[in-house]
Image (cartoon, rainbow, N blue to C red; front, side, top):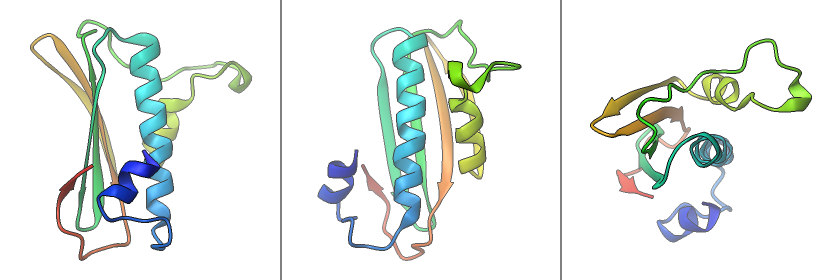
Length: 117
């Protein structure tokens, strides 16, 4: 993900700490889809002025994403909680046979043109 951000013009030397939060949220949502969903898993990231839109889909339309409750943090399962804390908005929906889990993350860069990452 970091190399792809570099490819579309958001190199690491640009001071955008939100890019690191995006990478973390991307990793959490993608790993959840790979672990609990069904192939294919498709991730889309759109960068725009003031933020990022992250959408991860899989074919497990009947499996609702549910945050872990009363679980020892050492056992994992905190990814959705983490994404909720990092994002300004998040959710999920079903479109046909695909489940989409999405999050909007803020960025300090207000002059960025929309770009598909």
